[in-house]
Length: 549
Image (cartoon, rainbow, N blue to C red; front, side, top):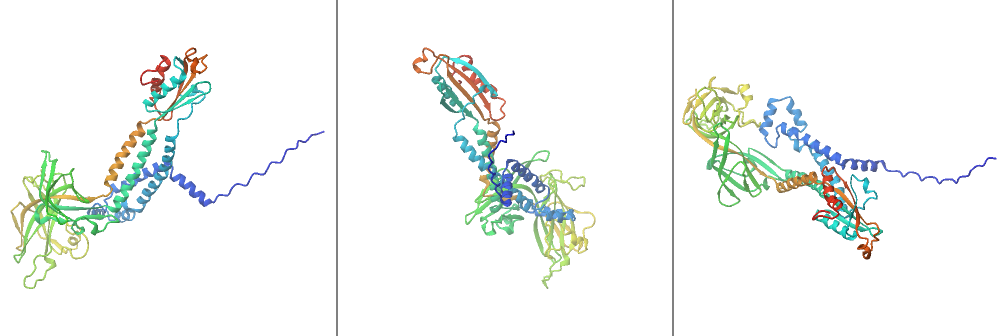
């Protein structure tokens, strides 16, 4: 006879809860975005994305170099422009990486901050049952003090060594002492990430509300300028800044001192200037390369220097025009190139009409210290033997066609199509200060002399202090995270054999038995030595030395 065992029917499992695929996708995407691995990848991508900004010339920094890149690479430049290569830090793809990194850091840091705050309020955990299974273990030893006195001594010693401690009484009259140290490591990690967030915020708001402009300022009271967009050689305003928001100040440079080593390397630059803020009076100021002039909502940085050539041109009607033309250095010895254009010359005084085909331009090289070898290369950056080599062109300079161009070179298109012709022959004319040059039509050009100029960068960044604080805090947090090590140490103090744990019997039975164990929470090669120093004196000698249990 077969006996069939009857089993009770099992209740049917509830159907799985249906999860909206859309919300599941959002949740998983958020978890992936806010992971530390994603933050590191985005940080790496941000560094890689900044490389084109250092390779290609940027419109916000130097429009002239962008124009030169178009001339040198006519096929490649339009594609670089379409991809945002000339405005990398304002391109949508760079901004997307920036915003994703910002979001990832916030989503990563805030939960860690909450967990860290909870861990700081939590007492050290209880000791495991088997201390001998921990990476560091001190076998049980006898000490003459009672368990209560021994536990109290251990706790006071650990607190002096900056351990967070917890003492708990165990059944049978024993005590356990739990100690933990190294929370500064996580504090440093969080501090570093919050500092990185502050830097990202500072860069973003600095771009929105900051501005900068570059200006070549020639020495002389007649060459001053006021803080206006139209008076900058190159400028860029943040998206939230208008021309009316610029601070009101005027400036003129009275003198510029430059000293050089015997090899021609610059030794020192010092600009003497006068500045007026608002409706006040001019005051004298000095500033150097590493000591900018600090004004209200503006800092004036000295980033370069050179020579401006003073030329006087007298046309066929005896009318003279004088121009002060900055020449741009091409090497460390201040060999400089430039152009002087005279579009409003040869105007008939009877008809007061200008013949555009009689405009004059001079293009050449200035040598602060010329040599006798005939090469157009300066031998020293100071003005020891100034020489100017010029080529003359006559015709239509192309300044009235509405097309932007360089003020440091003639329009090569006009030369190519024959609108601007060279009238000085094959060899350039050499001039020294005070000498003049008579052209083929009887007009005359005089090399009056030179003036020094300084290249100034005027900037305002409202978040500069935030960036400084973020950088300092980030360095501090990095040091804490590198040199901090979290570890735990436990002591179990039990009455010696025959000791009931009662104070009345302590003197008769007396003594305690101490066992210790340690666990490093992070990679800490020096933990074994620290553990031995904390446990050795108490277990080997039977007593605690001053400062160590």
